[in-house]
Length: 280
Image 1: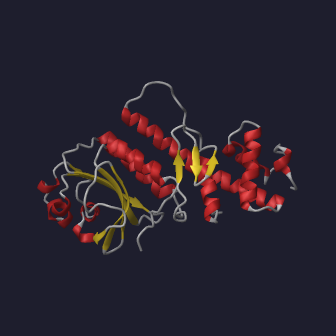
Image 2 (image 1 turned 90 degrees about the horizontal axis):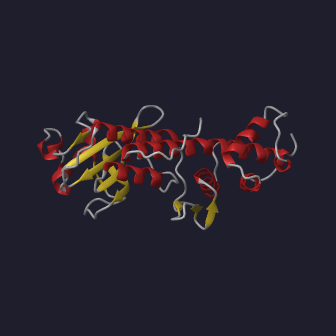
Image 3 (image 1 turned 45 degrees about the vertical axis):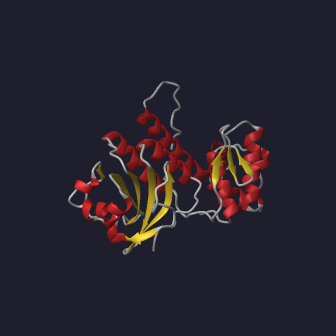
C-alpha cells in the first residue's frame, strides 16, 4: 500500500526547502508499492509533461526503483550510468540529472522517496545531499498520520500562519489546529536563531532544524490538550483555544505553556494560570 502523502501541514515546508536546496526543475515525493510508483507530491519550478501529482508508473520503469536497488544516489548524466540508462522513464521524461533518498517507516521499510530531477546537468555536492537526507528524516520521523484532504497550512507574506480561514500564532499552533479540524489528535531544545550571515546550505540546515523543532513542539501541545480535555471536561478544540488564549494574554509561546500543563499532570505543585489549573 502506497504512503498517502496528502496535504500535510509540514509537507509544503519540506518541499519548498528541498527545492531551494537542490536548485532543480522538479522535486517530488514518490510513493511506492511492490509494483507501482506514484508522484505523491510535486514541487516544480518549470512545467514538465508527464510529471504531476497522481501520475502512476510501473515501479520497474523508474529511476527511484534503481536507486533503491543500489544505483548511485545522484548523477548529472543519467543516460551514461549503466543502471539508470535502462530505466524507461529516463528517455520518456528526458531526465539528465537525478538525486534521491529513501524515506523509511519505523520498521525500516522504504515507503517513499524524496528526489530531484532536471533536464540539465545539476551537481549536488556532499553538503547539499546531507541536508536532503535530513529532510527525508523529517518526513519519516515526524509526519505520522496524514491530515484530511484540504487542510493545508499556509504562510502569509507577512510571516503569519493560517489553516483554511483560521489564523494561528505560529507553525506549532497551526499544526495542532489543523489536526483538530481534521477531527483526530494522536495520543528538545529550540534551535538558536542567529543574525550572523550564513551561506545557503547553512541557512537551509537552520530551516530543517526549525521545522523539526515545530513538529516536536506540536506533540507537547497535543499532550497538553489531552490533559486539559480530561481536567476541564471540554472538547479538544475548546482546550486548544483556551491554551492559545492564555498564552496570548501572557505573551508566551503556546508550546512553552503546554509543557507546564503536561508537567502539572504528575506534579500538582507546578504553577499554572487559573484558567488552566481547573480540577487536579
